[in-house]
Length: 254
Image (tube, rainbow, N blue to C red):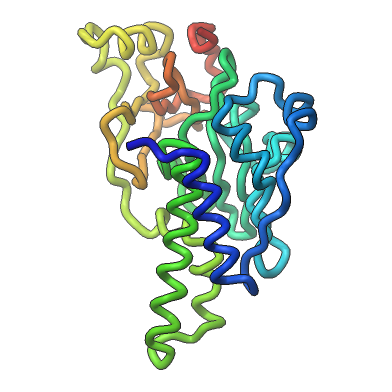
């Protein structure tokens, strides 16, 4: 079952209610503000942002949802580019972002990249509401474990994991390795065929349609050149690494 905007709103409010010293929700935006910031904002995301514009954490960090401040801009990032909205950037060099379809404006899956992992990207959630529900539940679960056994945990040491439960995705090994596009030529899958037709043989691809997030994806072009991480396809369900500065087809704008 798809996670809805209302599910995310309720999960975040529960997070604030139970851990008020660590999390504070910032008020949502008006319809006029949302339309001005992102005219093609999907209805579900609009519902979410009318209720919550950010999650402020103890300290200076924020999980931003406001499209006026989440565009990638000139932040340090390789790959996500303008077709994303940056939700969270940590001093660790890890960034979490939601993919945005350049043609339709649809907000899709949430991914992450890290300064510590080269050619590796995290597939965090199928949607922004799913990411937020997982975030809230994992933060609360970790806080409950610490409170239930205070002798085993030091609250100050564990606070990072409570504030940033999404970081746990980087604790595992790569679950999926990209398939070279050269090996995907001639596929009977029409959606996949449309994507690979516009890609060089050296690109590598992960089909996330049947994958269960969160997981890590190893994506390195076969010619070993520096990659750019892109999401392609009509439903943006293909995670692809292309050699840097590779021209991409316009089919993604359908």
